[in-house]
Amino acid sequence: MRPTIGITTSLNDGEQRLSLNYVRAVEQAGGVPWIVPMVVEDHLFDLIADQLDALIVTGGPAVTEGLIGTLPHDIGETAPHRSVTDREILSRFLSTGRPILGICYGMQLLNALAGGTIYADVEAQVEGSAPHSQKRNAPIHPIHIEEKSHLARIFPDGMPDVNTRHIQAVAEVGDPYRVCATAPDGVIEGIEHPDGHIIGLQFHPERMGQAMRPLFEHLISLARSAKSAAVL
Image 1: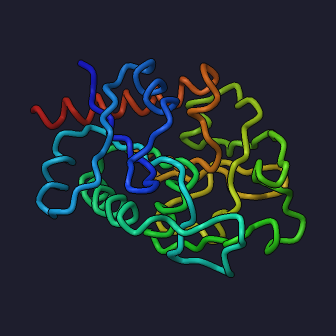
Image 2: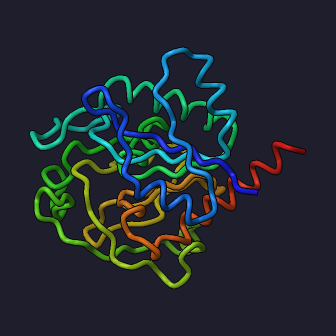
């Protein structure tokens, strides 16, 4: 039984766009990738959400909710229609407890919607922060996973060095999330819900191939359980 995994997209010049890396990661982990359309009518969000067993909120431009500071010149705000779509579909999932994986922008959005705050430019605002954007020649870096976190259970032997493709970063973590991973400079690289059904990652696991397959298999496993529970 392959669960259906909704994947949000970017919006550029009136076109929804999605890296195939997300689709392949879900497919290889045993899920059915389903690209979430940017509809307008409210009732369609309910119908779409009803078809999905889990949700991936992908990377994107800047999150402006809970923002600390001013956005730098090398990151723009998210297109309004994408912002509305992401919030609408997320609201359906957050109210049902189905699993969610937030990636980069997706993690920041989850945090902001929970009342957390976001640095507009962590490198400029937090003393000692290293560059975290490839636009600024940031390298890959190791990651520290918190002991006894759900992320640590997914990667019991640790995680390889991760990519770094962000300018913003989580400042204060919103309730009920907790930090599950950090970079060497202390920048938050992962948050999770206490029960493990929501994980947010600041890096891009879909770009890391087989090394991140356990993460996507974990999401598929949760989605399969959610699907089975819905049938009962």
